[in-house]
Length: 285
Figure 1 (cartoon, one colour):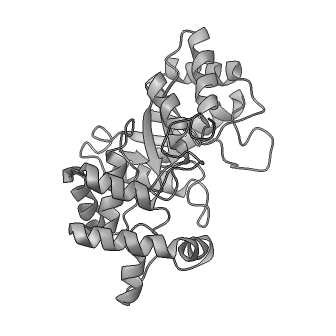
Figure 2: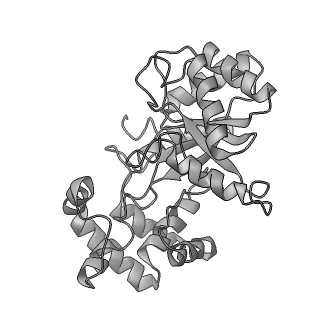
Figure 3: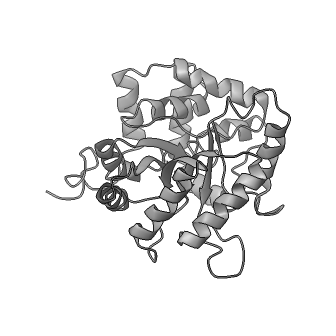
C-alpha cells in the first residue's frame, strides 16, 4: 500500500509525490496491479475558488488530476484529507458516488476527522444507501493518544479501519536520544521536533531504556504497540532507507505481554483526568 496526497511535495511542487508513484507504475511489471493506492483530496492546489476543500467541483477536478499524475485509471482509497465544515455531506457523497460509478475510485476514506465527524459522514451515507467511509487516517502514537477517546470507538462502531500517521511522532519514538549520544543524525533536531523533544525528554529516556531492556529498537516497539491497539489496521511508515523499511517489518513479529503494555501505559498515559477509562468516563464522572 502506498499512501500519498495531491498536496505532498510542497517544497518541490504540489503533486510531486503522486508523479513519483506514477513514473514507478509506468515501468510496468504488474506494479499497479499489486499495489493498494491511496491518495487524498482537500489541500489547496491553486489560488482560485474550488481548488481546495471538498466542493463537488474540486473533488471531481482533483481526482482527475491525481489520476493523471499517478498514471492510473483508478484510485483504490480516495481520502478526504480534512473535514470540510462549509460543504454539506449530501454534496460530498454525491460527488464521491459519481466517481465510484465511473470506476475512478473504489473506496472513500477520511483523515483527521473527529469521532462525531465520522458519525455524521456515515449517517449521511446511510441515508443515501452508500457504503460511506471505510477508513480513518489519524495522528496516533504513544505520545499522541487522543484518538482513543472518541475516534477509535467511532471507527470500531462503524467498521472503519484506522491507519495511524506519524507513528513515531516525527521521529521522537525512533531512538532519537540514543542516536544523539552515538553521534548519529536524527530528524528531530529543529523546530517543532526540538520543542517536543525538550518537553518529553525524561519520558523518552525511560522509553528507550525499556526498549533496550526488551532487546528491541524503539521505533519497532512503537509500531508494535500500535498494531496491538483495537481497531488499528496498520500504521503508515515513512522509511528513508531500505534498511529502515526492513527493520520496521520486525514489528509484525512482536507480541507485547501485559506487563510491557502496562509499562507503556504508565510512560504514556491516556489523556484526560480519568485517562484509564474510555470516553466519556475519561473526562467525566
